[in-house]
Image 1 (cartoon, one colour):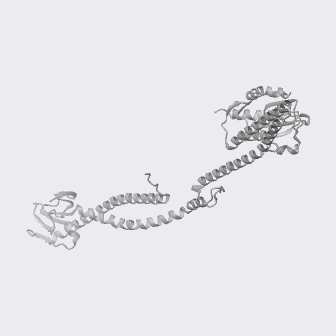
Image 2: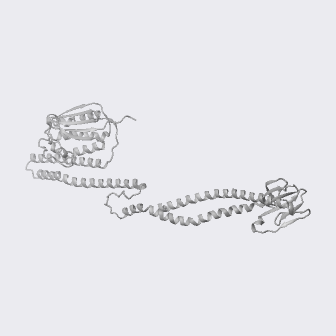
Length: 454
């Protein structure tokens, strides 16, 4: 059983509290060390001051062979003790809580002593006449207690503030994540076929790339669905005519009165099957191209590719009693060889299949771009109909197929549509115009020049 991942809100609150807690912990450590240092300096000063007072008082209050013990006036005084010893080591003055052992030695100044199982911080100073050595000591644990009290007074407000901080953080994070919640709610309630883009105006900058990418995905799905609907509708429309023609020719063959009529009808059925097959192949190819957003491109010589394709199509040109001419120079572009072969074949097949030209000239020139041009000397297309070229399943009003050989499938408008799509995938641009002398049709494809090799 997989564990449920933490919500973004809980992660933000937890990480923020951990970060604040870590900062507070580090601050507490440094504060304690600084407090202990300041306490040591302050209490050392008090020890020295107390010793100075005792030195001053010892001149006129202590008499020979007299031992005094002072009472404890404050609870903290039990942690501080003092003694006065003669140079001979005789105790002359001591506080009530002073240990039996001398707090210090005969060396003036500060010292650390271990006495009766306790650690003492001691300051020693001689009287002005040198007759007595004054020792003022403090239990070291007392200093720890003072530093501990200081740090606790510092941390207690912070510890009490932590739950309040958590509540404020929860409120702030909830408010900050509201746009994300709104996006989630929008996706939850929208219908499955609603592919409208999500708004970006109220989206936080951090998730704008995510929402923009989702909008791109929605647009791609919408485009794919539209292409599928269009393909289905176009297929149903375009296949209806050839299928009806096949049925009619089959009925003619069935009702033929002699073998000659039957053979002619069967030839028409075969020709119709060829046209339907060509149409389906073109439709499937165009559907595959529509599904592609990019093509895999590699450096290639477009001139060499043209020579190969035209050599393969020489038989078709001869069958159409048409001359194929190629004028090309080596031209390197970034292209997809498979798709470019389809592009060239469709351009030449389009010229062969419309108007029965006697000559088709293919040229490849280098300039600012690499320009491929296919020109025929057929009847051509009126300039007013150039914009219709390449529109799917759109037959031109001026189209004349009366002279088209029976071996050539009738036009469906898909050949140039495929050319347009392949050109788009290569970043190329298509232009239509008249051939030399205003006769025929010239189709030019401008490819960007290949960049320098890395």
